[in-house]
Length: 81
Image (cartoon, rainbow, N blue to C red):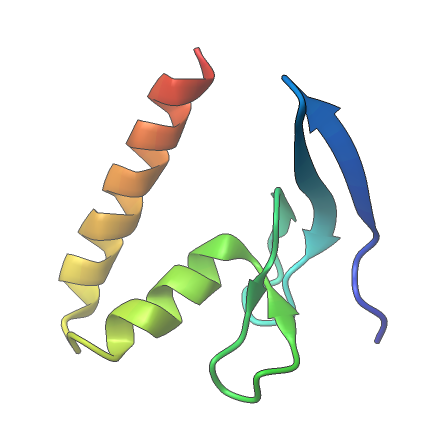
């Protein structure tokens, strides 16, 4: 399976990477920069799965992990407005 395409764009004189892909862990379509899986340090996964993998290293409580990810989403949505 090949990695999703990455395109560079310039916004306010700052280069950003933008991606659209399907996560092999969750099967969800995502937009934005992918995360590098902690499982093999090779596979690109969606930002949510990347956050879950990072949070698993500090807490096994999945309900708490989901609350943190929801907070991240709310914060990102408010920044886009």
